[in-house]
Amino acid sequence: MGRSKIIPPKKRYYMILMFITAVVFCGFLSFQNGNGLRSDRFYIYEALCIFMCLLIVLLFEFARNKKDPFDNVFRNYKHIYILYLMGWVVCIADYYLPRTLTPLILIPIVISLTLDVYFGFTLSTILLLSYGLICEAQGTRIICYIFIILIGTVLSSSLKSKENRIWGFICLFCSDVIMLSIFQYLEFSSYTIAEIMRIFENAILAVILLIPALFLIRKLILDYEQTKLLRILDVRYVLIKDMKKYSEILYLESLFTARLCKGIAVELGYDPMLTQAAGMYYRIGEMSEGGAKEAVRLGIQYDFPMRLMNILYEYRGELRKPTTPSSAIAFLVYYIVKTVRRQGRPESKMDRTVSVHKVMNELSNAGFLEQSGLSVSQFVKIRDYLVFHLEEGV
Image 1 (cartoon, rainbow, N blue to C red):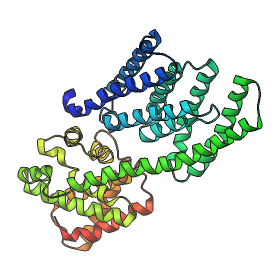
Image 2 (image 1 turned 120 degrees about the vertical axis):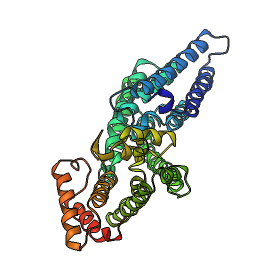
Image 3 (image 1 turned 90 degrees about the horizontal axis):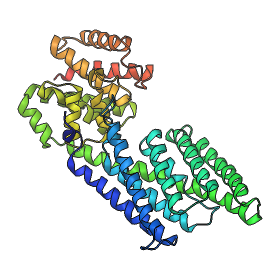
Image 4 (image 1 turned 90 degrees about the vertical axis):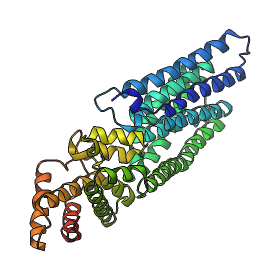
């Protein structure tokens, strides 16, 4: 599988935009900081930002070559560029705000939530250290930025889950107050009532800004995914047409699998459209006698949403066992439909029950569902649903 097949050329344009953005924002900040076009520092800072962009590109390029090369976070250059642009906008805003009012902690939190902690930390470090050097910040201020990155990336883990989100916001508020108080004293060796009030204002502002930021990120990602899922589930979509041309049996079985997956997702309260798409395209790699890698290659080629790509990567547990409920549902339904096809349509409900129970118990005992997040009660509901609806046949 060549590099050109892993990353479509159009996505590389976002890397070019990243370099342009770095030159523009770096030049603006450097000029505002008193470095004119004739200043050596102006061009040194420009060279620094270009070099930092090169590091970002190399970071994601090298990440694609690791053992798990299909994780979509390493290919979605559009998201990376948007996060990079957002980071510079926040830095510009920070430049004009008082020292005790800083929105910089939003950068590591939002990037970590969108990508992951490793890339959140790395990308935030590149952004904030570049910003600090261009603005010629003192050592204490640079150290403050490093602490902001550390706190933001650590807190992002708690903000990902609904159960811990309240505690995450509380920790964010307390961390912001403590950190800014310490560095305010280290930098100026004094406090005033106004400065203390601004520190508390900054902590409150960080929480207030983060809530809509989280909502906006979730909405943008989900809206994009839902639009894409609607498109690829249309029976007129090119891949579905290709599947039908390749094998009428594969097409009909995939439709049946998708219908079962959607019904189970509705029953359990998971995303029905995502799970339906997982069922529809779960066997797409079989069109060229391939497995998970071929399915992922096609998914990359047709720009499938990230969550669907992860499910395709977990096809039959070849490269990775199911790690989400939707992936586990597609995995179980695939094996049940495969069993029905091999054994023939069960003659009675008892035959269906025995067949479904046997296959699902074997898969569960083999450890395929350990990382899926399915509870025992959900496993039982899936089993009962399949027993009842297998009479529809394929």
